[in-house]
Length: 131
Length: 117
Image (cartoon, rainbow over all chains, first blue to last red; front, side, top):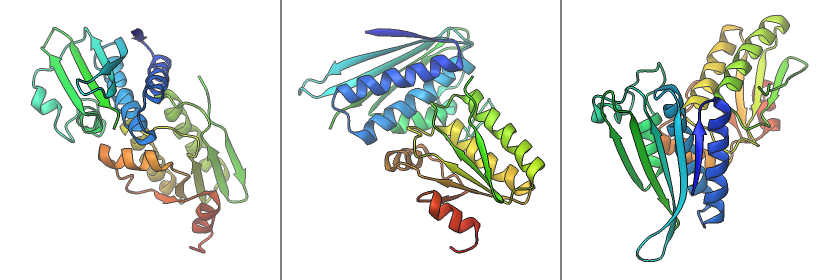
């Protein structure tokens, strides 16, 4: 299990590279690798920009029926999110962007869990399974 | 910070992205391109993303903005060389890169700029 700091733009690139390496080693197709790395990029940026920095964890998981997958966990101790449903709506943004980061990342993975409370930080866990 | 080089050939600016893009590098590229367009009066921009492994919402938005900025300098932007996996992922992410043209490769991109397409 690797824990990676997300404190700069360079760290975001390192997280993407690590996710790519682990996903390629564990049987994800090129398209699925690309989807997972793209989701990781969105989530790592959120951790940096909205969470004020945090950590990422990349692990390999096995499903009950023997499929392997890659699980990513992002956590920050930033201001948190007051309205989770709103934050997951396409086009909703606080940062002047397109509002596709969180909602788009959710579409790119197989499992997505968002935990956050105002003042208590944010954590996001996602899984992409090999096919 | 890695900087993406810009080459001027005739009336066209060529950008081939060969690094793992971080947000600051893309913003720098946007500024450098605006400066080059203003200084050279180039009529077209070709951005080659053959080596780019992912385009997320930020990079996608920046590419669209580069297209808009180019138009203010009377230049057209063509994005070329997108990988199939990137195209699939971009679409699922919900990004259409509206406002910039795309072409299969640099040669076809140049044909568009030269009005042959």
